[in-house]
Amino acid sequence: MLSHFYKFISVIVLAFLLSCCATPRLSYSSFAKIQKGMTVQEVIDVMGEPTEVTDVSLETGVGAMFGLDSLSGINMIWIGGDAKANVIFVKNKVKSSNFTTQF
Image (cartoon, rainbow, N blue to C red; front, side, top):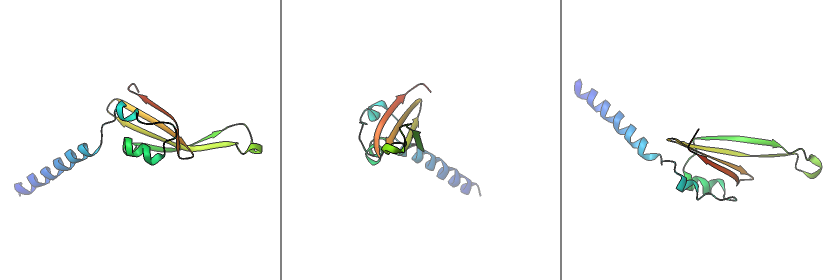
């Protein structure tokens, strides 16, 4: 009975250790590779899977006359340790990005 308990604990500890190794640490050196115009997939290849993804929409005030009444895109956030990276995509391309260690 006790040997089953030790096996169970061993599996839990191993799973935890593997999950820690699978997540790359967020670093400014990785973030610095992001450039305006990169695609979503190119950024994911550099940064790994984001912690959070949300849709964003912005009313431009220009109006439908020019076809620019609103812009929509994706906001991706990576959080790791004491760092946070934020990348906004419009039409599947990087429009802006921000990195901070104080949040």
